[in-house]
Length: 483
Ligand SMILES: C[S@@+](CC[C@H](N)C(=O)[O-])C[C@H]1O[C@@H](n2cnc3c(N)ncnc32)[C@H](O)[C@@H]1O
Image 1 (spheres, rainbow, N blue to C red):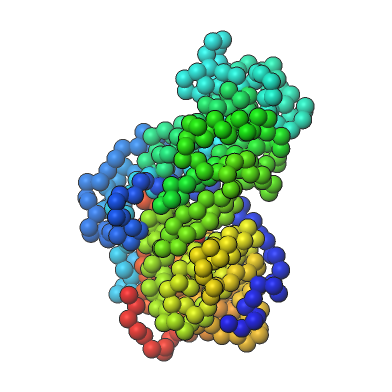
Image 2 (image 1 turned 90 degrees about the vertical axis):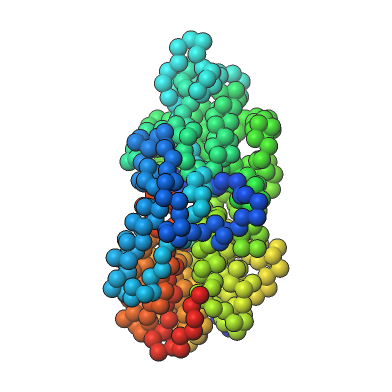
């Protein structure tokens, strides 16, 4: 691998991934328990083989709005996504190149990341306080945390007791809908969300009031390792001082023994962005490990990790198969997050992989992931992917395979221009937004590339979202069988 692909020259062009509270519904994830012997790809089904009558009713369907199609048979949902992909890609790919979507055998409780806000609810009459919220002691007692300093706490000190709400925001608002019966979120993670709420009253942790910018606990973010079962709980607080945090964590773990680590994230800004910059470990190592495609991955509170582990395995297997590594290729994994795709590629036949992402903590995790999986032919760089590619192109480098998985906005023109200049024989483009992907594919087609395969994967059953993997090859390059 040329030395110019090393990370040092590119500095720390960090651009934190900002998760907005209003995006919480779309970003929550969860899992269901694996049945014995089940692995990602085996769970994938085409639309044709999904049970036609696979419908469950969601108790909050009308108020929540996160799952636009939850009342519709799953096979019908998949057929609709197939039709949408066929229409969207019609002018960049032949119909023969567009494959049927890979769906899930069990399309429920698949989100392995669950986010809940905490907020004050209705006032409680004297003697009330147990039951739905157990918010009895919220405004009383020693060591209560109401936010940073006197000012922030004012207005809560002698306020009447209120119930504590948790759940998800109703569509287009910040009104919290309790979602105990949610069909897509991991159920164990939901139990943790409720246990935190129940303990808040006992430990005097006031829920955050976003209008007044008072109160202490803003959100809990629970991440679950699909195969490992490990759980990371991030408690997002409006203020640094967390009274009785050790006792709080001890009690939380006692109630939810699957929790392996707890992190406090401090966010004192008036903002919709959920996570702040400052963090401290309260319990355990501060990260969880999970296994995907035979590799073990480290997941910390800030790092990107796909939300549906079963379908992520399907997605990565598809991508790596389409890349057709033979042991000789130099590859780039652009927008690599914690290095997941690049590391799978490095294990499955790429000679050398360079991953690039703007988020420094994700790159730290990627390097650690490479180290503890014993992968020596992958390196990771903190940089803007467009800048990184442009610098390589300016140095006259060539690469064999480009793997790319940009955010919803797609790739920049600078990135695509540099990609064409680096002249990879194959580009495997993974996208969570087919609209921007089609735009980018059109750009590549104008620079001598052709779309050979479009493989949709249903990463988010019951929602409008569809993920697509496209194989793009240089026109005139010999075509081998794309599995
Ligand atoms: C859809 S995620 C893909 C992550 C990874 N491939 C995976 O499957 O877990 C997009 C990633 O792009 C990163 N990103 C966003 N803008 C970027 C940019 N301009 N340059 C490099 N990385 C960027 C984000 O930090 C995020 O990790």
